[in-house]
Every structure is written in C-alpha cells, then in structure tokens.
Length: 411
Ligand code: HEM
Image 1: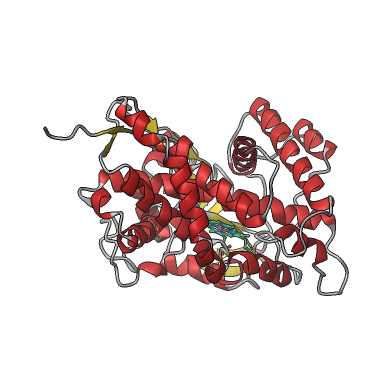
Image 2 (image 1 turned 180 degrees about the vertical axis):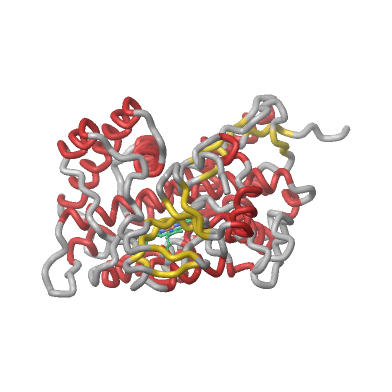
C-alpha cells in the first residue's frame, strides 16, 4: 500500500482516508519516508502502550529529521542532551519522577485550579468584544488558545520572570526541531531558540531559589531509586518535556475545539454549559486529537497485527486514527459527544506513560470553550480565509488560526 508523505499538505489536511485504508489493508505498515512502522488499529496500539517490556519508549523524543553536525554543535554549546526523564524513560527512575509530576497535575489539584484558569480566560478575552464590535477579524488562536495554557502552567508551577511570548516561541521551536522536517537553515534557527530555552531552564532549575513546595523545589529534592540526587540534566529534561507538553499541545487542542465548535450547528450557543463543553472536548480528543502519533521501539522480536517485527523496530502509533477505528467507535466520522465509551480513546496514551497532564488539558479546554462562548456569543469563522494554515508535524496537528468575526444581529 502506498501512503503519502506524512508531512505533506494533503495528509496533514485530511489524514482520515489514509488512516482508514491502513487499518483495513496494512495495520502494521513500513513507511519508507520516515523508516517507521505505522500501527493503525486501536487494539494493536493499546497492546503496545500496555506492554512496556516488549515495546520501549526510548525513541519517543528522538529527532525525526536527523540533526546534522552544525545543528548538534549549536545544541552542544549549551550542553543540551535529551536525557531520559519521562516520556523517553524506560528505566527504573521513571516511576519516581512520574509520581512527582502527578503530585502537581492530578485531577484533585486541577479542580482547585479552575478559578485560576477561569480568571486567565476572562482576562485574555477582555479585549475581544470591542475588537470584534469594530468589525475587524479576531484570531482566537494567537490571542487566546495559545496563551491560556502558557499562563496557567507558569502560575501552577510558580514560575515568574519569563516573557510568555518567548516561552511559546521556544516550545513551538522544540516541537518543530524534534518532530518536524525543517531544512538545515531552519534547523539552525530552531536550534538557537531551543538552546535559549534549555539555558533558561538550566538557570531556573539550578538557581536553587524555588519554593520547597513548588515543582522545581520538588525536583531539586528528588532522589533516584538508589538514593542519589537527581542529576541536574535529568531535572532539566523533565522540565523541558513538561513545559512543551503542558502548553503547546493544550493550545493546539483548544484551537481545534473552538474551530469545530464554531462549525457545528447550534453547538456554540450551548457550549456555555460545562457539561456540553466537557463532552465536546472529549469528542474532539477522540476524533481530532492534537497529539496525532507517539513512538515506541520493539525490545525484542515480536509479532504485531500479523507482522513479524525484529528487535529495535521503530513504531509510529497512529493515535489520531485509533479514535476513528469503527471496531471501537461506530460511525467514527460523526461528532457525537455522548458516546457511551467516549473515554476509550487513546489521545493521552495508556499504561505506564499515560499523560499525567490529561486532567489539566481537559479542564483548560473545557473552560476555554465555555468562556469563549459566554463572552463572545455571536461569532462565525471568517469565510475569507480559504484554507486554514495547519501545523503538521510528525506528532502534532492543529489549526494555526481560528479567525472569527462578530455575526450581525437581526434588527
Ligand atoms: C491536549 C493536551 C495533551 C495531550 C493530547 C497529551 C498527550 C500525551 C501523550 C499521547 C503522551 C504519551 C503517553 C504514552 O506514552 O502512553 C503524553 C505524555 C506526557 N504528557 Fe501529555 N498531553 C497533553 C497535555 C499535557 C499537559 C497539560 C501536561 C503537563 C502539565 C502533559 C505532560 C505529559 C508528560 C509529563 C508526559 C510523559 C509521561 C510519562 O512518560 O510518564 N501533557 N501526553
């Protein structure tokens, strides 16, 4: 079976027909373009995620486009080495670090942060009504979706003194450098930005002034299973991942949630209700999650989906397609927010590495939708942009604009 370039516009805009065909014709398929084995059935992906002995996470953060020597030199200058910490850590130091992250992001703690998220949403949306009343278009992605998770994360982690636009730029640069297909010239620019990000994190982690009960304070006091302190580079690696995962992906989810809600007849008016908004977010996570794929590698020869794989085979788990597997979700193309098995999707992974930020991401997206629907009840997407610019990296996909105008009210 021939599938298109995974980074190409055709695939990024509408991956569904190919994902459907893969599931039926070649559920474990070698992609010559990336060298990865594409795994497309829900049951196979779940099996991989739940068996960390046979399928290791070591390649989860590897650069999909190899980094040539000049780029490595830029990263080496700031001492950047992606040490195994969380998503890419299959060793026995993972469980303790994960418990630490969970302490800051578990559902109970997120519930107490709802007022912070609401306040941030209100604040970001405050200029929008006047802007829209003047007849000008307004981009809910750059003004709102992208900024909300960054502000909330900084507040939850108790980190100040960093410009939020810069943090967003750093985080997006890291996604593109490690999960994109940039040219050498672009890789060099991205490496400079990622280097700045890494330096800032290193200074922030090492500075030692973090409150004992803050995330950074907890990392500083953390001990490995053998009782030794956590090496600084592992602490920086953990922060690096939490910062990227904690803001970019959630901003992408909010962008898709808002866009799809504005396209769905009648939904926007009902989205002020927390239950409606929450169910919509869940259905978007099933059908169109921001983290579209995740990687694993085989620890030993293994048979998967009828295919014999050697040890060390790199796998690309097609999370986005798994949410549209008709074996699990009937009529997958229909947005149906009250599906009985709605939470069976794999948008947050499963098993030992399942996303510890899931409660925060769900809550932020739900608050973002209901606050936007509340403050801006009369909106429509601008029809004057024929094709929405899309982020299309190996593992991340979302609209890069949600441009709206105020709908004229009948007189
Ligand atoms: C819509 C937003 C998000 C999506 C779709 C998402 C998705 C994912 C996925 C697919 C994984 C890999 C799971 C696996 O290997 O089984 C993951 C891991 C992870 N995510 Fe998220 N994530 C989101 C938001 C967040 C947030 C807000 C945070 C932090 C506050 C976060 C922190 C992490 C961490 C630390 C890991 C690695 C966990 C480990 O290896 O034990 N994520 N996420």
